[in-house]
Image (cartoon, rainbow over all chains, first blue to last red; front, top):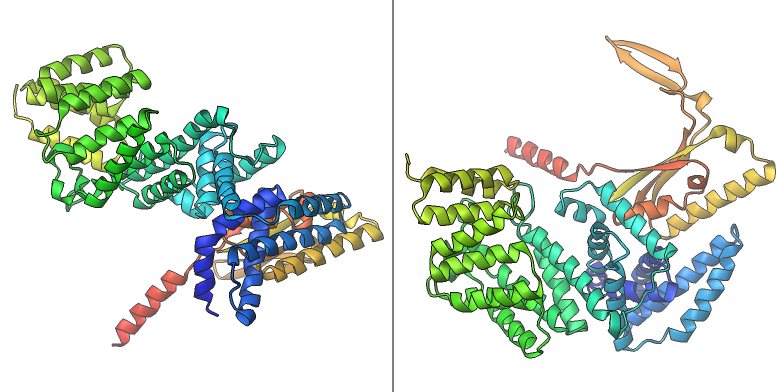
Length: 412
Length: 131
């Protein structure tokens, strides 16, 4: 009975078992302890008796038994605990026998609880990565360039909040589902973006986080095939498909119009495009699906020139109505520049900047600089590149902007 | 990963317990230790004699000097430690919260530096030199 087999079972089953134990025991900390004890018991018992037919059910019932046992032992010092043990025992026997569907529901319960809007955003992210994905506190801290004690405290506080505020461990009702799902999608997209385009630091891409976000997105689509969940998964896959082309051999940033499209990952594009199709067919089209549809048009074009810019502008128009934001307007302006020429795009960007909305947004200034460069308005291009440079916190971005500045024709 | 849980107690508080209180407190400690042994978290652990038994040693300019007691006067004193093996910091915090003294004093949880990589590097270098 190999240790490796148990490790494999831990990898595939521990999150499911944890999700069910949280429901049965009504407490994150108790459930984590029970999960640990169940695997300890498995190491001993499975060595002699072999792996049971249904290891997941075995782990759940062993974990539950160990938890009750542990509470009983501690109750010797704290009488209030014996009541808790009795309550858990009673509650658990009612629902101990869970069918597969029930267990899958537990995973959804866990996701919705970790992404509960009563928790601060950074706590939602940390809790989801630790409890749903099984990352360690230290791994989360290093991925987000934070200190481990900071992440640990976020998690401790979040669990305390769930306990004290009695945040229910359930999948939201149909009426609340849309809002609550938005919160979950937001957490997943945040994790993805942190991995795809790190907000600071020397590495442009922290691949593991993006991969984790895609895994989460897949899990969500599997458990809850809502249109926007598919839209988000599609969006992440379509972005991810360009990863190999986004940086050159020296680690320098390559913009989409200059990327070697043969490096784009076809499998991811196909999967993403198919998901866009499914999401659009549902007729409940939201912002993630629209963004994914735009990304799919890019992915399917053989070059920047051959991209269907008219349709992209059209999709941005819909997106700007569904989810109005200056960043959407900026992206729309860039698409208009491709459809109608740089002058038209520049006018739109200048209008946005004039409102002061994106005055400190690096990409607005670098987009403006790029259009000025193409129009031969060198001094304006230089000023905008410089402004973008002041705002960037990311090393590859900084080098990219410096290169663009150097490449501008000298003089006026 | 390994974590050192440093246990800080107010010696006055612990010393001021009645016999039955002190017995119960000890009983809790034994039960806690037994629990983390069973769960596989336990690596090592000891209780320390009171702070007045401490001697602080320094070497300056090759001369050994000693002073009584610890470095600084504090309200809480280091009274013992557990070395534990835990999955991550939150796991370690969860275990530390169950140390009986966590209710009276405080527990400082410190991750242990893992020198495995450095040691392996050094061994590889030494082997390379021998070749």
